[in-house]
Image (spheres, rainbow, N blue to C red):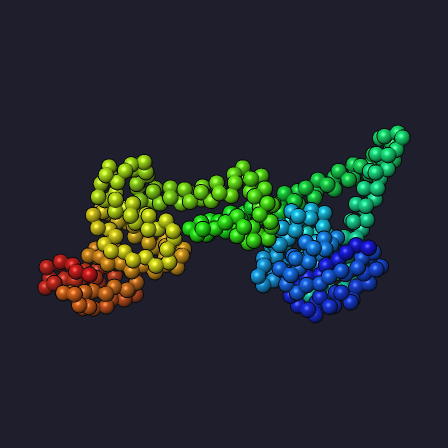
Length: 358
């Protein structure tokens, strides 16, 4: 009897499939059920079933990541998906990972039975091929006509499984790299990333090395170095990367300090005269970096400046005079209009001489 595990967040679906399908007619039996992805993954690793019916939209676990992990660990396991996702791209990814049947909810019992029949037949053929191969190996005359065609079929089927396993491995590596790129500023470990991709540390280490040729620590260091290179180029200080502080100018030191502050993707940036001693090009690079941090990280920038040009990029400006708050300006239109508004207000404050004190 083939062992079946059913995983779905809706208990009524688990019960309906468990009781509504004549499993014995297909040479199968339900050995376990689960209502969460993490519980299901634990059961699968313990029982090693032949067939799985699973949802892919489960709290605490990405369904595609779970399938990729299972495909790497158990390349011959038959997997059928029951899901409410109707996104074609999602279905394509699932199929590339080696899913055998993709069923959309609500699925009727005939669709479930057809999927079960297909998977059971595939397992039966696989057994026949294995038995034929054993017979061929023990036959007195190797390479008999009766054995050769079945051997050819077995080879073709194995190739498809290898492709699914490779795609699953690629998916896990991409997921791991994405997590590393998003958390490279933290002290992340191989164990942490393995947990996020639902595979063992040994498996993840093997996959990373096999797909990239680098170890986990090498990849993490490479990600950090690439981030530093990007900032060096953004602020025009690439040419001083190998120089000591005493060998660079004051403006270059200023740009380096700003680049260093942005290295860890901060959520709050406190900037005291960040464009001071910088030329216009470098000032624009600093402001653009701040804006990028705001867009990509939803960061908050608190800046003290005498530069009206830099202040015009802000959403809110508090003008100070003689150590006291003089006026608050809120940007409601484009930056150029706000800059004109700032300059006009500063002229009024300073009696028309144009000196700025923000």
